[in-house]
Length: 177
Image 1 (cartoon, rainbow, N blue to C red):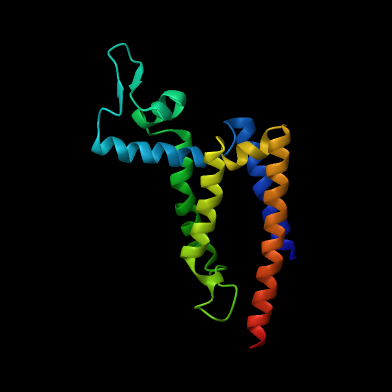
Image 2: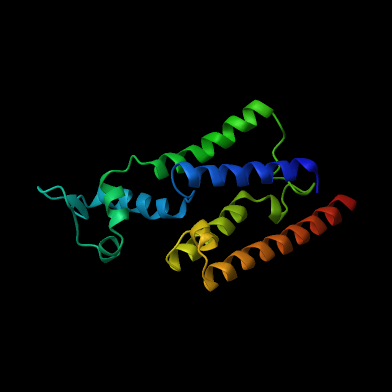
C-alpha cells in the first residue's frame, strides 16, 4: 500500500473523531429513510404532518417508531442531510482540484464488471440496506460496544480486505492480457 492510502485513512479517521467531538457521529444511512419519507410526502402530504401544538403526527408505523426520522421529514434541512448532500459535491470538488484520473477503473478492460458503476453502487446499496434492516447505520453498528457491533465491524473489515485482494488479483490478471 502506498503512503497516500495511509494518509487518507488517517485524515478520514481524524475527521470522523472531530465530527463526533463537535457535532455527532457521521452517518448517512438514516438519511435514506428520511429522503424516502420526503419523496413519499410529495405524493401523500398527510404521511407526516405537524399538529397545532407543534408535535409531529404520522400514520406510518415506521415513522412512529422512529420519531427522529418523522421530524426530519417535516424539517429536512439538518446537519445530516447537508452532510449527505455534500458527499457528491465534495467528490466533484476534489476531482476538479486535483485533476486526477478516476480511480474507479481497476482494469484495462472498460467492460470489466469491476469498472461498472452500477455494480459498485449496488454493492454500497446492499451494505446500507442491510444496516438499515438491522436497525442502524453502518457507522452506528461499528461504534457500539456490543457483540453484534464488534462482529459487524470485523465482518465489514475482513470482507473489505478479501474484496480488495481479489480485485487486485483480477486487475493484475487483466493487465497481463
